[in-house]
Image (cartoon, rainbow, N blue to C red; front, top):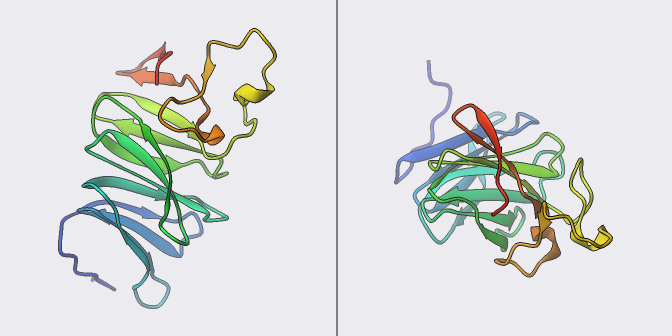
Length: 174
């Protein structure tokens, strides 16, 4: 039996339960919804964005950011409290179909109809094997580059390991 229900104007294209289990993130049309659902479902935030969306994910823990992607092949990073777009990156060569934050909230992954998975940093700092370009000593590593689409230093990303149909390849272009 259905315990709670929300009626939308457009078809739901993604749904994610927060790591804490208290918030649902969903996309429908050009809108990202965040619903609290402890006793009854109520809208915590609702942001209408530029284009048709297929996916969104909320940063676990601090909940400072959410990411969203769609048919325009871009992934965008937003401030969760205000809905303000902080960054935009041409993420793939096909629609962005899924986005998910890592449990630590420092990275997120995107998946696309171009059969690739890419990993992204949310902030400009060393994380795992990633080292910000500013911290590299010459000669610069060919595996790290600043994204030409964003002047922000947090757009620094390692060339991701691209997963294509079960085989791993190294992709040197973003």
